[in-house]
Amino acid sequence: MISSASDLPPRLGSLTFHGPLSAARADRMIARLAATEPADVLDIGCGWGELLLRVLEAAPMAKGAGIDINAEDLARGRALAGARGLADRVEFVEESALGTDRGPVDAILCLGSSQALCDPEQPHDPAAALRELRRLVRPGGRVVLGEGFWERTPTEVELAGMWPGANTGDHLSLGALVDLAVEAGFRPAWIETASAEEWEEFESGYRYDTEVWLAAHPGHPLAAETRERVDRQRSSWLNGYRRVLGIAYLTLVAVA
Ligand SMILES: C[S@@+](CC[C@H](N)C(=O)[O-])C[C@H]1O[C@@H](n2cnc3c(N)ncnc32)[C@H](O)[C@@H]1O
Figure: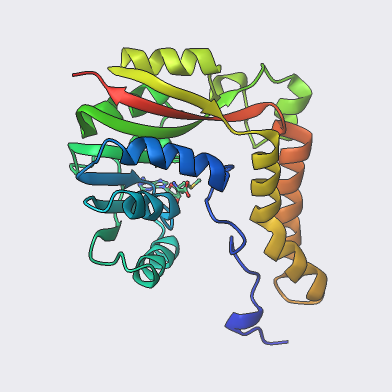
C-alpha cells in the first residue's frame, strides 16, 4: 500500500498544551502575569505557543515572540495566531534559545523547555537555565517556568522503566529547585505542581490520535515502528515515571 499524507500517523493533534497543564491552571497563571501589564513576552521553546497566545489575549498591549527549533510546531503557532487575530502582535521564530539575545523582556514563558537554554552536550542543568532566565528578564519582571522535579526519589525498578540512562541526578526535589531559583535572583511568587489528572490528560492526549490511527491501520507500512514507539512511551510512563516525576509551575519575580 502506498501511504498518502492523510493516512500517516498523526502527531500531537489532541493536545492543547505540550505538557501536563490544564486550561484552569493556565488561566490562573495568565491572570497573574497579565496583571503586571508586560510590554513584551518571550516564550522559550514555545512549540505552537498556546500559552503565549492566551497571554497576549489577556494583555492587549503586549507583543510576543516565540522561539523554537521545531518548524512544524511553529507553523501551527502561526496558524493559531492568524485565526485569533494576533498575527500582528506575535512572531514565531525558528531559532535555538541557546545564548539568545532576545532579552531583557518584561515576561518569559519557559514550559517544559529549559533544556533549550543549556549546553546540549552536558547533563541538564536547572541552575544554568535559571541564570539564563534571570539574564533575559528585566528587574521586577516575571518568569513562568515549568520544570521537572522528583515527587520522591525513584526506586531502581522505576528508573529502569523510565528513559534510557535515567538516574536520580536527572531531576531535583521541589525544594532544591525553588532554592536554585532564589539563588539565581528570583523570588518564587507562586509555586504549584501538575496534578495526577493533568498528567493523565497529557499522557493520554499525547498518544490518543496515534493509538486510534494504529487501531485503524494495522497493516500500514509505518504501523510496526509507530506501535513500537508508542508502546515504549506508554511503558516508560506507567512502569517508570508515573507519580514519581512531577512538573512544577513556578511564577518567579526577578529581584531588582
Ligand atoms: C515539551 S515541549 C514544550 C513546548 C511549549 N513550551 C509548551 O509548553 O507547549 C519542549 C520544546 O522545546 C523545544 N526546544 C528544544 N531545544 C530547543 C532549543 N535549543 N531552542 C529552542 N527550542 C528548543 C522543542 O522543540 C519543543 O517544542
